[in-house]
Amino acid sequence: MTRAFTFPGQGSQVVGMGRELAESRPVAARVFEEVNDALGQDLRSVMFDGPQEELTLTHNAQPALMAVSIAVMRVLEEDFGVKLQDAAAYVAGHSLGEYSALTAAGALSLSDAAKLLRLRGEAMQRAVPVGEGAMAAILGLEMEAVEEVVKEAAQGDICTAANDNANGQIVISGHKAAVERAIPIAKEKGAMKGVLLPVSAPFHCALMQPAAEEMKAALAETTINAPAVPVIANVTAAPESDPVKIRDLLVEQVTGRVRWRESVLKMGELGVDTLVEAGAGKVLTGMVRRIDKSISGISLQTAEEIEAFAASLKN
Image (cartoon, rainbow, N blue to C red; front, side, top):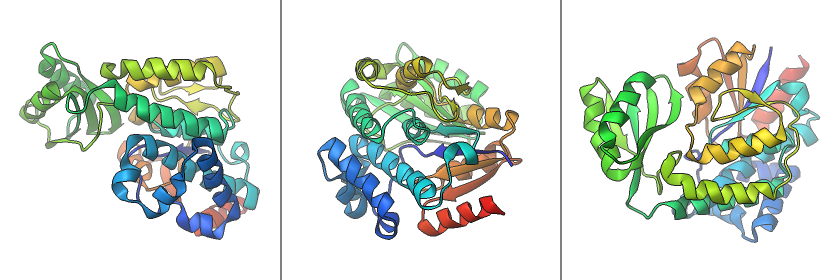
């Protein structure tokens, strides 16, 4: 069996995430304390007690989701003696989850990851005035058809495929008017559904260039080590271990497409047969079944699930 650990992105956050793990496993509680210290904010109380509106704010959701993922990984390693490089051949994360993946693999420190994700969330929010951008999910069309849709809808505005999540599940991003034009065009081309998403900014498109510049400056000052196992990068859907290249790809990721479907297929080509999702929710585990039925998905959120997974490695 060849595994990869995967790490969820924005949208998986829910009030109460990480609480059970922190209450039952002191090593998990320490992760949340370290993130609080790095940010100078009691993010843990927002995660555990809400309100949901505050947790969903991009600059809170991003470091919070990373913290839950790393808490899972620390429990696995410190309480059950499972080292990442012994249990998996690759790591990958969806959008902000790429920072979680790099932290789990030792490329980024927990403190640096929290600070970078706080900045990333704030920078993305600053990049486009509220109301000028939008994102929409296009369901039931493949990428080739969606490329035609966004080209037709742009009409001088920015409109692009931002997240290639799974077969027939693609998210577009850009100027609000263009994204709104794209929905009826997509339906004309056979889409089952096109729906605007409740997001605060148009992520992963050229409108995020100001945020990319902020991240470039911050990442230039951040130590990045070679990861314990290669990371499958969002923007290339290919394995990467070179810290210099990883830094460049994290900058490119702000405006670039999240090639998640291609990333899962690439891991399959590389021999991975099991994806282990570490952190809040089961979004990525659900996507696996749509992308490649030969790859199985496991979700680790609770202490019980982590213990059972660790035990399975010994059998």
